[in-house]
Picture (cartoon, rainbow, N blue to C red):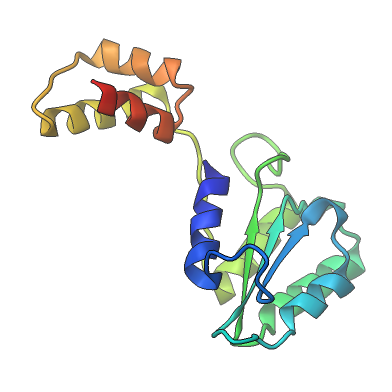
Length: 168
């Protein structure tokens, strides 16, 4: 789900062309600060901006120098550069409720210079309310237990639930 939102954001900012000179996709697990710096400081080519995506960066894996360099780089980005950090394949939480210390510090830097959001899964009971509301708008009815069951069967993924609601 998160990858789909990240892709929509990239298309909105950089266009549909995956091979664009203004789009740079980096793997956060193998990230080199020099490579990130190079991508962030490129001038846009026939476009308004350069878009850099970094997937699965865990700040805990960075040494102090790299972490400090990353923070300073993010704080001093050119106006023509947009960087999107997103995490899909690694766990950056220490107790499933809060980010690890370095990841929390990095998130605060993101919030100070841009935007940060969390895409967390909703519980089946939370999704049941959404399902009931959507079906009522379509002049259909479903019990709370059945809506909760539907959410569980769809693994609490909103896109899958929306497909199932359309079938109903």
